[in-house]
Length: 488
Image (cartoon, helix red, strand yellow):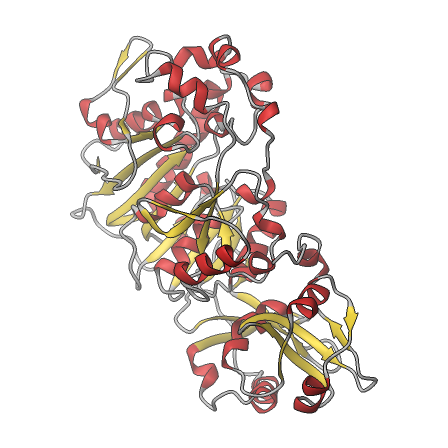
């Protein structure tokens, strides 16, 4: 649920009467305050951001926003997140484009906070795109170790990788696979996130057209797919591990009924954990629906209704696998050639004044003919399913002279001691628009011609070329530049 692309005007949102006359009326008996629920669906959703912990504190991000004339509000229960007005376009801000923050709806940030994550765990995100939760997982593991982020769609994998590159995520391998057929040879995981494909009913505040085009019968059709995914999650979870199942829909057919059937199928092998979400007003899971009585433990699931927290709708279940079950053998790991890159790496050390042991913290290999990819030193991806990408593409070697990519520059930039050029606000805006602009005499005197790391107020922006003719040429990627307004 990537909020960056979803700005909705209040005029397009439904009225309480339209809600009452719609298919949403089937949930009237589930909602504690129907009038408040219907009114909430007619209000635009706040924009929620989280600060990239590898690059900026939430306090420093808050200062940037205040300087911009905004009034960010803390989100109770999410100490690394801030709320902004619904009309704000986060994806067009300079600090967003260079990975200081990510826009992700508040309730969508919750699943990762409940997974009891810590460095050293092996984690699978089964339906990962567009990657906000994957990045949260990665940083919860301190950007080390092994996360596998899977999605069934190649196009969505590209969007996922783009977000990981922008944010500087080093411990993720991406795969394109039907997660319901995840191979046994891929191994078991300590933690699995299944943010399941669903009817998205809880996103009406971002997608008001859903009210007209939604087919409630779709929840019945989605159920088998969701059960297949959750069944595979249980199989791929290590004994004693946790599975977080979530959706952004209200339908019990996609939530409690799915969980209840999988609990029955794996009778005694998994159990529902009680969930506590401080700062959020939640409701228990449903235990009766359309004449079916569910086991009382389904109340341990949590529902987040839009009117209780000024959010979208969301459902969360946390399952624990019996620690006494036999574990499977460790998976075969991918073989990565890593011994052919000293020349390129030494060149970067020399040019930018990095410490001699700088690369010891990373694992580097060539995944394409274009150049080198960089991963966490202890990243250990499985051999199957085949990877779409590992870590970030950080150094382009198929051009002359070779140069760091923007994601590479954002990563190494804070550590460089030479060839770093701090830009003014006006120069920053020109840089993000991929323009050619003029350096100051002081900037010219401080740097010889060639590649430089461009920064603004200490925050790295990417690579620029200082030409002998006395101009600076931006190397900011066009696919990133298109969403940057340079707004301060």
